[in-house]
Amino acid sequence: MNAKPNPDLKRSPDRATRSKVKAATTEAPGPIAETLAAFASRTRAEDIPAEVRTRAVHHMLDAAGIAVAASRYDFAHRMLTGMRGLAGEGPVPVIGMPARLPARDAAVMNGFLCHGLDFDDTHVAGIVHPTSSILPTVLSAGAMTGASGREIVAAFVVGVETAVRIGMVARSGFHQVGFHPTGMVGVFGCTLAAGRLLGLNERELRNAQGIALSMAAGSLEFVEDGAWNKRLHPGWAAHAGITAAALAREGFIGATKPYDGRFGLFPSYLGKEADRADYPLATAGLGEAWELMATAIKPYPACHFTHACIDSALALRDKIGDWRRIRSIETLVPEGVYKIVCEPEAGKLKPANSYDAQFSVQYLTAVSLVRGKFGLAEIEPDVIADPDVLALTSKVKYGPYQGGSFPKLYHGEVVVTLDDGRVLRHREHVNRGAAERPLTNAEIVAKFHGNVARGFDAAVAARMQETMLGLEAADGVDAVLAAFSPRLR
Image 1 (spheres, one colour):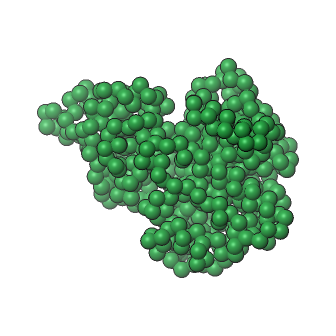
Image 2: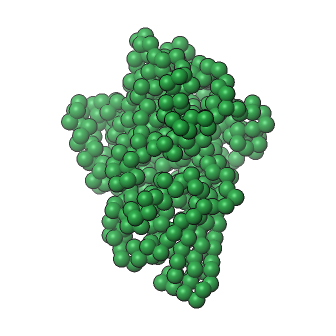
Image 3: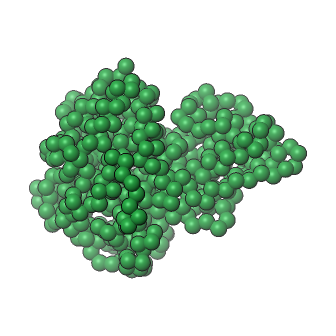
C-alpha cells in the first residue's frame, strides 16, 4: 500500500497545478452548492487516482490509531457514559473501546476520539482537521448502508476534498473571529460523504448542504480554559452530516445558497472578516487537483501552528547542551496564530491542563528543550507541572515570523540567548507534514503502531492495520469495525 509518489499527480491549486485552475477572485463563482453536489454525485471511485486512494486509507489509519490512544483517557470514558445514556447500545462499534452505539451516536463518539489528542491531520490552507469528522461519518454511514469498501474510500475522499476547500475560502478568517472551522466546514464534507453513501441524487445533495448550514458549529472559547468542547466538534459534524443527508433523502428542503447567500456560512460566520472570503477556492480544481495530498499528518500531538517551533527547539537542543544555561527564548510565529497559541500570555506560560499545554507555543518550546522530545508523555499532568519546565516556560516571549506565507505554511523560529550572551536560532520555514514535507506512508504506519501500543499488543495492531489499509478491496466496513473494537488488555 506504500505507493511511490507520482510526479504527474495534481495535488493542490497552491502547487504547480494552480496555473490550470481558474484564478481566484473575491467574487462568488456561481452555484457552489450545485457544483459540490455534482462532484459528490458524479465522481466514480476509478476517477480518483490510485495514489490518492492509497493515501486516503493511510489518513484513515492514522486517525483510527489516534482514537485508540485517546480511548485510554478519562475524557473518553466520560464521553462514552454520556452517549450511552442517550440511546443505549447500538450496532456500530466504538473505536478502541468495548462498546457499540447507534450509528449517529457512534459517529459522535468516534469523531471525539479521533480528535481527542489533537494529533490528527490538518489541511494547512483550510486550517481544518478533515479526517476526524469524515472517517466517523463514512464508518457509520457505511455500516448503515452496507456499502463496499471501495465506495467508502471514495466517499471519504469526496468528503475531504469538499470540506478542505470550504475551509480554504475563509483564508484563516474563521479563527480571527472565534470559530473553529473543523466543526463548521467539516459538517458540509460529512453531509456530502454521507449523502453519497445513502444514495442521494444531486438535487438531494444540494438540499442536504442547505440543511447542514443550520448545523455548522464550533467555538474557539476552549482555548481560554482548556475545556473539552473542541474534541466534540468533529463528531458533532459527523452526526449533523448524517442527519442532513437522511432528511434530504426524504425530501426535506434546505437553503439554496448555504455558502454565499445573504445569511450563508461566510457572510454570517466571518463577520468583519467577510471581505477576505475567496469563493472560487470552494470549487477550484475539483476532480483534478487533490487537496487530500496537501493534508498534513501531524508528527506531534499539539496544535499544528506550533510544530515548526517544536522542531526548531529540538534542533537547537544539542547545540545548547545544558538547557539551564538559557537566559531567554523568543518564539517567532505568524501573527495570525497569536490568538490561538500565544495569548492570553499568562495562561500560556502556566498551562492548567493538557489542552492548555497543546495550545501554548511557550510551553511546547520549553518542554522540548528540557526533555529533548515531544510526544504524548509531554502533555501528562506531571510534566505540565514540572518546576523545571515551568521555569523555562516563563522565559519564553513571542513575536512575528518574518517573510512568511501563512496560512499556506505554518512557519516557526526559535531564538535562544544563553548565559554567556551567545544567540542561537533555528527556523523551520516549511513545517513537517506540509505538502512540501509530507510524512511518508511508512512513517504514518509507524506513528499508528506507536499510538495503538498504548492499549493493544502487536498482533491486534497488525490486524487493525491490515483491515484498514485493505478496506478498498473489502466487501464493506465490518472487518475494520471489528478489528478496531477488541477488548483492552
